[in-house]
Length: 320
Image (cartoon, rainbow, N blue to C red; front, side, top):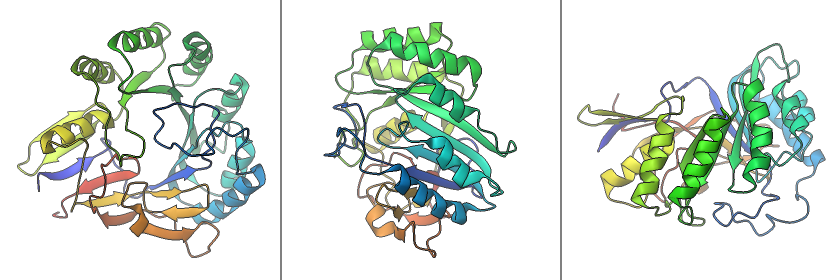
């Protein structure tokens, strides 16, 4: 095999439970490059009620009791929910340690995000916001983002680059975030309904993307080749671009390699080992089932689609 190890970050925590809770498909935006492209994505309100989300939260609470976790909360857009109530169900007196990431387009009132960041469960849980900028009203977005960046070191912004974005647009956005001292990076967009296939973007846009990401202070992603050669990257998207280049494909494929994956919970309550195109063979059950575990799982990649490293802690050849 070409690779011996693929590290999505510089320090993968194998004892940590990586849990990706996809709360709803609903979103108040209609981005044409969105990889979800769900029919009811832009309905007036989400299908999943606050009551249903809290019901699932109670089930998750029992499964993560006393664990070390990395929990990602996202949709769609989930900032319309009462997330403080959800977090209280999950963490109050539950002896959980770890990190909780909220992914949002930052369309809710700023007070909602401030209250999310300022939750306190005895300093055992760190709350972070990863905000997505979708090429909308830049100044309105900046007004919120700079408040959060000033007060919460964990705040960061990510913007998807796709085939309709120009180099000039990228420069304006990146320079504006820099001027306002907001941690920012680009990510290479994936085409909707294409099993992880990356958008074709110009060489100059790709070069600028890599330049901006190289300035961002994050855990390094790493490729270790079978011959022992190591390459380090400032972002997962840069690593995936390198793999696509190595393999002469339109995306990254790790067929036949072992994937130590996290767990994803869908709006339906179905639980899978990861969110890749191979997940149909990785179905665990419903979150409401008592015997369904949220622990990490080792699986062999079937190569049914291109990898995006979304729920991976480590990928390796199986030779220790």
